[in-house]
Image 1 (cartoon, rainbow, N blue to C red):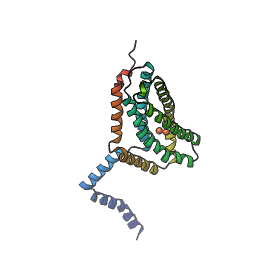
Image 2: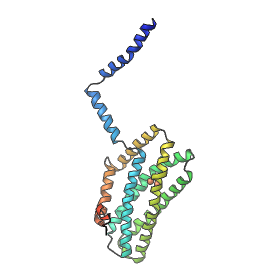
Image 3: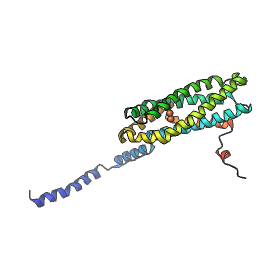
Image 4: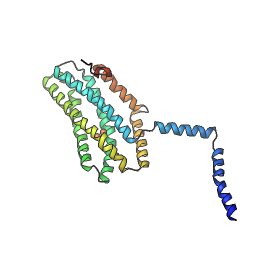
Amino acid sequence: MTRDSRRDLLGRIPAVGAGLALMAWGPAAEAQAKETKEKKEEEISPTEDLMREHGVLNRILLIYEEAVRRLTRRDELPPETLQEAATIVRTFVEDYHEKLEEEFLFPRFEKADQQVELVKTLRSQHQAGRTLTDQIRSLAKLPGMKDEDDRRKLSRSLRLFIRMYRPHEAREDTVLFPAFRKIVSPNEFDSLGEQFEEREHRLFGEDGFARMVDRVAAIEKKLGIYDLAQFTPKGD
Ligand SMILES: [Fe+2]
Ligand SMILES: [Fe+2]
């Protein structure tokens, strides 16, 4: 093969490749590409998933705050609202969200010898949260809520819960999750996102997250704290 003919052949290779690509480009391939694109858009990264779950927890903290306000002022507090909120904390936050952190994030940090002290504190706070949720669930019942001493104990458990979880989730959002991206490969990161979604769907159904948000909104409506505009300062 002469030098010129070799150059000629090499020059043709990309053209052959493009031809093959063109052959594979039919309506079926187009549909497949569209589906892949849609799937990619639907995919949520593992940390985004955990952060929007923190959003649900934040809305529960607002409900708990309203409960404390009513307990302190001796205002009416329908016990089922607090029961429902505490049930969401148990099933969605503790048995799902925190389990993901404990199974998939914390051990990776420990193995990488990163954020070890923070992980230790977060882990023990999950445990303390469970104890508080047990107390809240057992106290948020009639006739217990009529008893002055029980109302005081309930109010205390709620305040301790709020006090711990605000900084807890804020530290995860601002320190732990950003650091997590750096200790796992992009492939592992993507695959964790899929695993988290899969578990969420298995435990709570395909639209599990949206339904959880709806349940929280229903409690907010019962307590009159749903309308977001009410929190805007009115001005002088
Ligand atoms: Fe956590
Ligand atoms: Fe968390």
